[in-house]
Image (cartoon, rainbow, N blue to C red; front, side, top):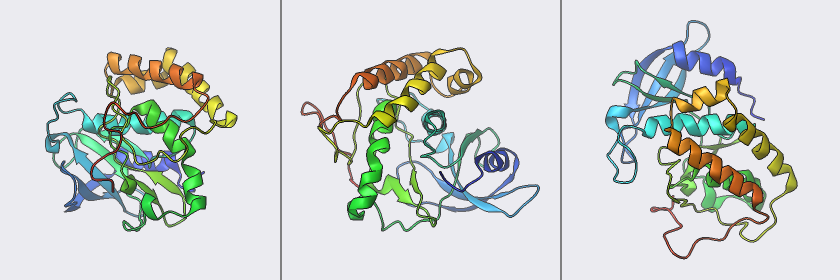
Length: 243
């Protein structure tokens, strides 16, 4: 598990003062580096993605990408995998409502395509996570390692589509048996998702009921899988660009 105190960071993300530091130049949507100034403790960097800066997409509802960032975080937490840095939705960002995520210091030149064999072996939960959230854009640069060598996943704005959209660079385990120990968290996640609960209420703030239903169906289907899937041949299975 990460050494980051998630509850404390989430509280600071929700309540701390946000100050703009700069804009990321890569990517099709406006993304900003901000500094969070909590009431107590040292300031820290975060990534702010305002709804107003989202490019319209033909296959996703308008003004929903920031919400999908938060929904992906909620799924990761419900699974107990802590794959995504603490992420919240704030109504009072510098450019209006948007997602705010803890910034992870990392080397952008170190990514999936130059991972060691040992690092690649850590990606089995990533594959299952992307199947669940129907990730349409798992680029190699969206898998990073922080200073403590902890693996993180970032950039989840184009997930949770009701149509099959999975596009990923990680097909390493196609045809392999899925380890039994990865099924238990998925079963527990399904219970949380189907039952009236605080968790269900939280995710309903970020996804439509139809998208949640599709998420439930994907989860049930995944529980029946015995092997990691192969790339589909009837549609594009890889993101572009790959990094």
